[in-house]
Image (cartoon, rainbow, N blue to C red):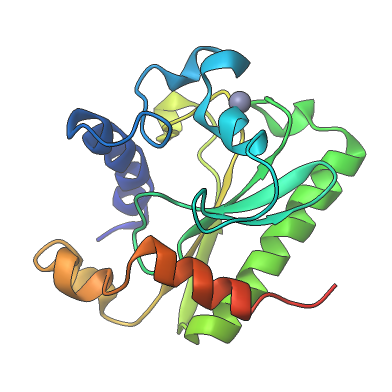
Amino acid sequence: MSLEHLWAGWRNAYVTGAADGSPADRADPEADRGPDRCVFCRIAASGPPSAATGVLWVGRTALVVLNAYPYTSGHLMAIPLRHVGSLGDLSEEEAAELWAAARLGVAAQEAAYGPEGINIGANLGEAAGAGIPRHLHLHAVPRWKGDTNFMTAVADTRVLPETLGSSWERLTAAWPPG
Ligand SMILES: [Zn+2]
């Protein structure tokens, strides 16, 4: 599976989840209509970290949350608390903490899963594959050699062997101190 395919898959997962009748607060195809209807803004307003929301860490201007439709176990996102769509819209403080949040998440993934690699990146704009293009988010996806070979064929049984709740517990237990 190419990197482009993987990136686009994140968008597809959101759309598919919504069509399947998943909870509206996790996969709302109309979520990208502004702060009042934005899934990430609702997550940002959901309070401290909890297994119920999938939020792993909350800072002053950014948070880290599990992706509700993970590509692999431990797939998480760092997002600014503020509803901004582009890197240029971030303040210096927001940009710095967003990156710090991503680093914390990656450190937790490394400690919790020992992946052979991690994809980190963002889809800027709908054409680039962003599912929620108007609220910036950085993906961090643990990877293993060969995971692309069986991902599409037996995704349910091998790529995602654990529930989101289990991922939250593992990453929280492995979260860097401080
Ligand atoms: Zn938003």
